[in-house]
Amino acid sequence: MANRDDVSRELAECTECGTVYAARQWPNGTIKAIGSESCQCGCTDFALVETDEERMPPDRAE
Image 1 (tube, rainbow, N blue to C red):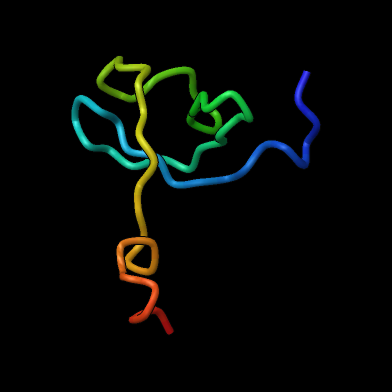
Image 2 (image 1 turned 90 degrees about the horizontal axis):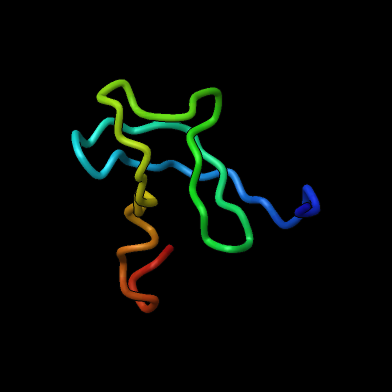
């Protein structure tokens, strides 16, 4: 079982419909929506949402 410090809270988007959820990313890369086993559309696959800072080149970040 993963240590609580190894699990990060993230924003994740359903890969089918694009709905965004608060999620946890486990050390093995698994992403699970918090409070639900699946999206409202029934999909269980999620991808991390990138923030503007994550997309910005390092020399442009504030």
